[in-house]
Length: 290
Image: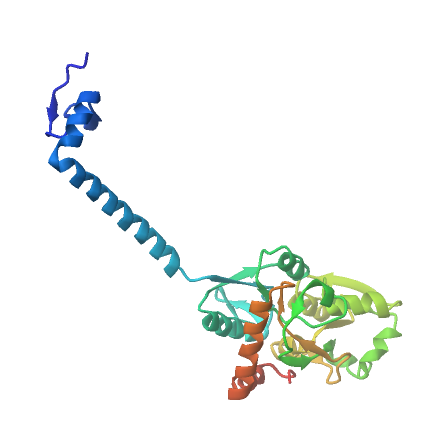
């Protein structure tokens, strides 16, 4: 027998002061509660508050913007790089414009360059916006948007070696040490077309440039805009980007195969940027893009 002090509120519902809990009595109490005038009012209030709570939860979910997950390797200024803890560069500007167009929250996902397309295929990111060039090797792995610029693979050399590499395709013949970023088109070119060269891998173009400065490699292959920026920022002014390009390629964003909605939205954005001059304004910061 429970000797705690119950109080009956007239609805067959007892409140125990010692435990601060509500408890319904036996069958008779329940029947009396159902006959009480306030019983149905209580049920109505409970139902109303339940609907309000559910509605608030649904409204909060509906008002939460979708997230656009953009895969990047932020080590290639001026295309995409990290500055002061923030992702900046040409691709970052494009990503912000795309997220705004979609009404989405922008989330950059940092990945090693070779992991960008595999993570896209696995659904871990929605789009790759990281200075990606369109190639026969990559096309089966993703849907490419309309190219936004034409660039290519260039050479970075020491000033003293400029005339040796003035015609870039000489690297196909020379027995030389070539620095490249792993997993890039430049890396594939060295593997397939430079049988006499020694391929030396680096984590970034800047790391390869430091090795070139220290005479640990003879030439660096990479995306032309990136190498131009590296040469311009070389404080000793001992490195030069060869004016002629080794290859000419298109830069484009990549989405998951079958994602026609995002592909269309990205292409629509590019059409708008071309029409209003925004695209050209952005690309002017990254010669030799065109």
